[in-house]
Length: 396
Image 1 (cartoon, rainbow, N blue to C red):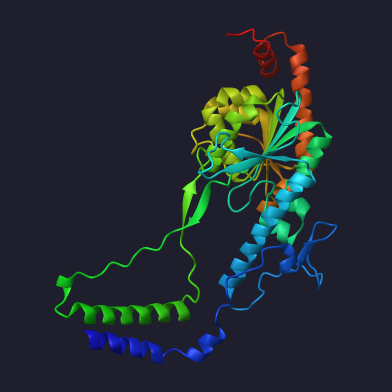
Image 2 (cartoon, one colour):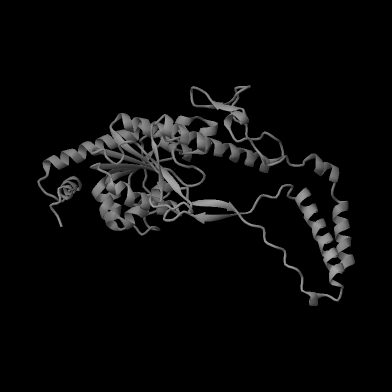
């Protein structure tokens, strides 16, 4: 059996052109830590450009090395994430707030961003929720930031417009769900002495040699650079996008002073919002004036949304979806929930940016309609009057 294994190994090696493989050796998976070291910068139009050539980012920096190119792209993406955080703080004057609110020094943490008046603005509050994946606070799509511009890929235009129109702003961070740490190496178990009649010392030397041969061969020619193994430590009460939104609602949105809450939810953010409604239906109806979804992936049937939730979504929500039709063209509804409108693009990641103006117009009309209804109503069962009643402590 041992000779048979050697024969197959020799036969395999004889078929491999080692010189050709060596030419395609993968470069080290180590990349710059700053935009300057990457030799890229954002120009005045918010476009990422090479500092020397002025060219846009090139994904295939090295031919036939897809994994290396992908790792390089991800490394640049992490730098872009930090860059957007800086813009939120310096350009938008947003404040980072750590989650959970009672976090200890030892446990992992997340954060959101609040405008100075997010909790105190008595009139309007805008809550921004992106989709899932690698995007973090302040981003709609990393691909757009790198390949198109900051306006289309970040939430900064929404923040700027909202502040100009008198909104307080909350920027959520639903994908910051865990701390990733390197997994400690597992010790190799020693074979049982009873497993062979060979002397232990001789057997260990032979096993070591064979293991090293196999390991060296595999890692050099099949997986040139072994990636580090990691494990994830979940962030308390923020271990998923749905948990995160529920936590932020309970600890921030529900305690904010604004009489009218507005929400923009992209892609998976729409699913998280419907899940929030399933768990906090009365509160959401009481506080939220209007919801703008962009290519939301929610499903009212799979998420067991009640009839009353469906009816509320029909009245207070719009979903701008990817479509070849012109912007704001009604699109045939798939399910009996919120009306669907064309975002004027067939690209999923662009739907938020393309529907930017339409969303704020929708919010303005929803607020005007709500104010007119409040003025004409003498009951305390409407959303606004119920909240006014609650604020004056006339109930309970």
